[in-house]
Image (tube, rainbow, N blue to C red; front, side):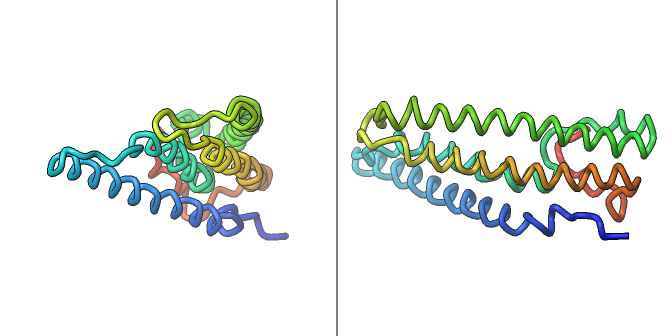
Length: 181
């Protein structure tokens, strides 16, 4: 019998690198905010545009953790129903939840693409203070959300195969450390 797919092995490293970019962006944003506060306090001269860029950096930061959360199963899940119905039904409920997550991310990817293309890029939307085009930030967010679709397809494929073969993840369900119940 062929080995079950392992989404953590297949796409986990790429998801980790995307999250690392988000973590680095958090540090850069925090340093910019601290510098801005110190400049305001000491010299009454804030750094122009920190607030402008912070809003869009935050969108990139938050979205950069989506792939890692998909691979690790760290989105909100309700597992007590599966535990109450038994291990086989729990595997199928997990697969169904992954299917619904795939549908949500497919819709998100489509809407982000439409928003970024039509409402941001083609209109030339810019930041209020520095008047820097917003499109580069929104394209990064959109690309990350689009990448989440094939990542979730792999996660769904793994959970579907586990349900068909009636094989839970080795060592029990290691996903219980997430925000799920």
